[in-house]
Image 1: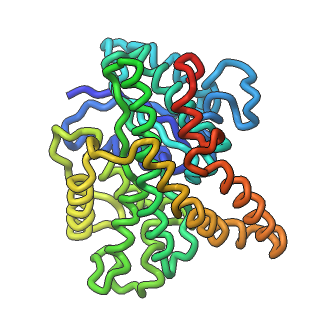
Image 2: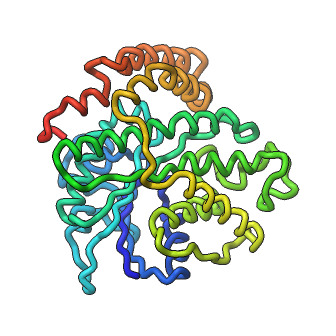
Length: 346
């Protein structure tokens, strides 16, 4: 089976994880050709217009590809290599703060525009949205982070559903599917800190266990990359049995445990799962997710990186702004703005 994949992302869709995915593909008999647009800390909009949003030069030519050259996804979308293979899959991710990205990075419009460009060049292609995860506020006690990821996953899915509703209104058959990677990591974290934990953390105190999958508070360790690649493989190649590949630091029994967790997660979170529509999502955010997100951002970032006064002022200032913007019927609400936009403005 031949497949061709392009990934538009940042450090959470890092080349190390993609190389593991490639190794799994080879072991499973999948002839995978892949490339990426990699720009650290970027949003979809940054990868289109640059980090300063100036849109200087050719759109989307920002960041680097897997060989360190200037990335050019539009050329990649249109190119057919020597074997005539078209791109069949686009994987795209967003900056990991969902409410901030919706307001400041125009996630809905940016995702729709990139998907449109991909489908224009590859009408039979499919777009998969890679749901990112936020920084862990306390790796020795990650329960608050797990709760945040459980609460954020429906909003990421709302973004995809809202874009899909716009495609349906435009009478188009193509759709975007969503891979809940933040939720997948939260599911693994729950198992790691459980009293009866996994072989991969045998002998470690509960407070040290998340260090097995994270190098810092957000970036994946080699084991974390292996697990995310395992989950991604199951979403990308559903018709192929996942292989067992040798990996440094993970023995056969530990690999079997991680594989079983990935299997169970993907089985319970299929690509075609349903989610909230735009109106339900606006109500969900206003009813409690906005306040919970603000509190988590404060604990995981602002309170650690800013002075006492500045962190609290930032929380107050953004909270005041979001309380207005994320009212369900506010004309500034990004979901409502997107729903009301003309097709040409998307």
